[in-house]
Amino acid sequence: MKAARTLAIPLAVIGFLMLLAGYQQQILSRLDFAALAPLRATLPHLISSGIWLAVAYLVNRIVGLVLWDPIHSRVPVPRLLRDVTGLLIYLLAITGIVGVVYDKPIGPFWAASGVGAIVLGLALRNVILDVFIGLAVNFDRPFEIGDYIQLGIGPTAGPTGRVMELNWRTTRLLNGEGNLVVIPNGRLSELIVTNFSRPERMSEFVLPIFLDFDVPTERALRVLSAAVASAAGSNGVLEQPSPKARLRGVSAQGVEYRIKYFVDPTIAGPGKARHEVLRTVLDQLHRAGLHPASPSQDVFHAPLPVRKLDARSADDRAQLLGRIELFKGLTDAERLELSSQMQERLVTEGTTLLRAGDSGASMFVLYEGLLHVTVKAESTGLETRVGRVHAGAFFGEMSALTGEPRSATVVAATDALMFEIDKEQIAALIDRRPELARVIAETVAMRRLRNSDALRLANAATVAVETSSLTSQLLGTMLSFFGISAKEAITTQKLDENSAQNPLA
Image (cartoon, rainbow, N blue to C red):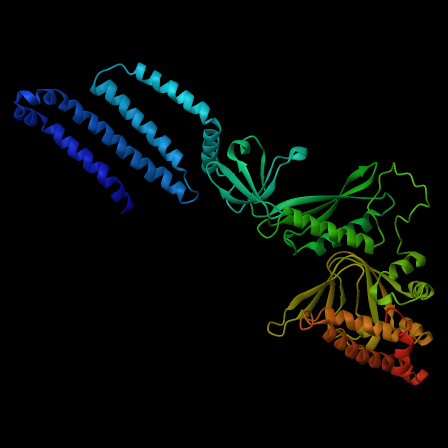
């Protein structure tokens, strides 16, 4: 219907003129008056010229219908481009009229037209360049609206952002800061364009990390793999394909590891994803007692800082233990005692550490690696992942402190290094310093409330009341489980007074 309406008028004009051309002899025979003699001489030329112009009119309509309208459905077509195309079509028609209808040489006509075109082209050089580069981009389609692109590579890299608008003169990007960046299409043609959204929506990124030579490769890969796995699922970092850590090479700075991860730019830009990966990597390294390698040219005028902590050393384990929230209330001597007693456990990926419903009387501290926490859904009976355990966290504490059965299943998502602490080791510490019971109970209570959806948005007063109530419940259960209330006859009031002296209580 639209095509019929668009072509109806030019077809009607051509038909009318062709009809006149067919009957022009009869029309001329009727023009016998002397006053109409000039008209008799010019009428055939007028009809032929009209036919040429009507055909040009029809061709211009067809070009708009076939070429410009489909493109306009994706991006606005500037009026200038339509006018330039129409001008060229009518110039060809006028050339036909001059050379065919009036039998005149067309060389001078095109010479004059060429001079005018040169002057106009010089005046509108940048505009014309932008328009035709925009035309090429729309036909070649190296990127589309919604794609995430980067202009340039290396030190000369230009803006990075999501394509918001693509017209004939400019391309507009929304960068990571929320600003609109306008790039002339002529400038766009001079740059290398990296499209992070093609040929697939996800893109692969690599983050280099350098560690000291004396860090075992197995340990480094375990920590880095857990770190990038922890970042998966947030800020555009994808869980599938699985992110990985690989050994890249060695240099004067240390051993180079490459962390490979995938990003969906439609969710978040590469900058946010890199921030998330780097944040988790640095956090996991800190939890494991490791630091990125420093250049070998560093000169220290003070005692050399500790570059790494070794989990095989009781002293180093005691320092690492001090970074665990649950044991910050212990003295250095107590942490050293506990670190020398806890049992090291090195497990491989896929190992089930705890199973929901099983009994147990120990807890675990994860030093390196990543664990997945799953529970069985009542509706389907299938195991569903509900959380993660990151390096520096503890788990299984309720069984060790209260004797409750395991509440969830914990599986190693990567190779992991952890330490197991028995009920007897904790009981020995509380037996000598009973006020530790409230410190530990309050830490566990605060942790459980942090994970509560109902209290996540509650005000401070409500959280404080709930924390105090849950702490008292846990404290009573712990004292009964350890047999301290009967053995030492210590009341909750006495523990409150002792714990008031502890700044962490």
